[in-house]
Image 1 (cartoon, rainbow, N blue to C red):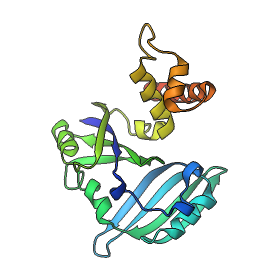
Image 2 (cartoon, one colour):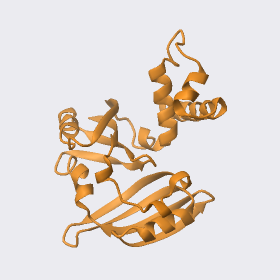
Image 3 (cartoon, helix red, strand yellow):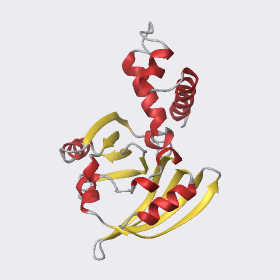
Image 4 (tube, rainbow, N blue to C red):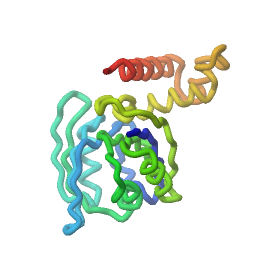
Length: 219
């Protein structure tokens, strides 16, 4: 049994349409989809998510989305809340979800949605089944394989450990040679690539590295 950590990037036509005037923007950091139930007969899906961001901005965004039938938001911290949502099952969602439907695999919650349209998820199953999952994503969906390996525990999957911004920071640093020995680039170069200050880049990397160390040491 193996697990696959993968990041999907959806084209604009497959993303949920949110009007510009109420788009979360900087008020939305990530959504962790914890549980969902598809009701094909009614063409709706119910789901429970943990959202990190500004609750009032997200409330306005959900209220403006035509496909959302109902929702309830329950704050759990200053910048986090649970969202229970019922919405129409869209053809756009089925286009990428169909890659795991009918296959002998298990999607390990949470599925993490970032503000840039990226979706990070962990899939558990037989290696050949995992290869088929990757092969069956629509051509329009960009697929980045982050890790393939033994799955030793459900808690602490990569998708739930890092925010999208932290993941982007680590990936950028690696690509630039920041983690090479000897180091091929400096923190300033990573910050430039991320379009942020050095202190912000440093904080992103330290938090991400700490989360990954914790994940490696969990038994």
